[in-house]
Image (cartoon, rainbow, N blue to C red):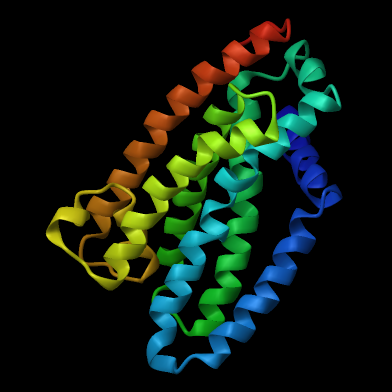
Length: 226
């Protein structure tokens, strides 16, 4: 029950600060753009849209979320509450993944994607990866400018290779872990086991790193972490 309340609290926080309204607007714009393209182009266009925005929203907004929580003393309260570090992290991951998958579902249906369940699984895993990356950076910064400066290289590293792979697939790029996300988003199931395993491994590694960095942040705030 404690985790459910924490998760619902994060969702309300995101609603309060306009995340859902923002992505409702983005969805409408993306749908209009999709309908402009010929049907033969829509699969690649929707893959590009999904990977570069809803799937990656955690990296874009995690800094703002953590800084808002710091300014409103939310983190100070959580640091001395019974809430555990892993509950805090998973609440962030799941609440942001909910937005990512909802927007991606709408875009996939409009574009007529072939394998929507596989696409949504990939989006959920990718959203978790980007959220954890954002959280790791956010725990170490004290300003939005600092967060933006730190995440721009990450965004380039994480977004550019999969987008290149979407249009120019090569064996070399195939070894880049996040290209597995792009493969699944396009609906390919030929190497689904491999791609899901790669994304799961990256998620697990980042979860460990995010746990460590969040614990250090909470200790600086005077909390006892678990």
